[in-house]
Length: 244
Image (cartoon, rainbow, N blue to C red; front, side, top):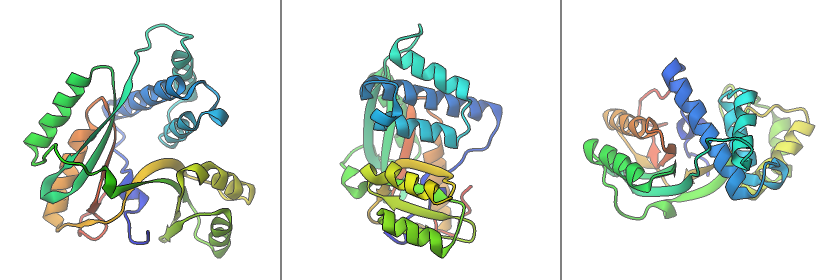
């Protein structure tokens, strides 16, 4: 998998203004509630979906109180919790980039209309099957670049890894993600990110201007309240565009 998007391209952090911060927290709360209901309980050791949702929330610094209330609502211990369902949208963005959109919604018609509007307005095409172009993977980011880390990761079963000056990104089979995290933490390595994601099998090359247009398209999708994750095959690492 060497050469695939680094985590900074798989999950780009948004600017931390209050409005966006509130949206991020709201998305995580929705994901936690749904994971509790769909996964059969509030114990992350027995609910992989919840464990992944909690890891994602903690990586975005969602307050513990918000997380606890979301679990309670998912269990039905609090009033006012809507029931959400997972919906997947497949299509192509600008310049033929395959796009996979994961959403949680309590109104399929509303969400479909909003997603379709972004695709139509910003040069995409919400048609065609693209899920086959992505693989489910666990991703772990460790703020360390050492031979010892590489050795531990390989021995623990990591499928691949990438390193830059500041961190090492590990890719795992989905079912091995948290077992490998436990091994690394037991060896003294901190894990900055540990989540399940979708990784493109091949990348779509883009020029810098094309990458800018694609990023605007993805950000418009991410701004929708019901959208949880947007995955693309765009090769942003080599497009000559800075991605925050």
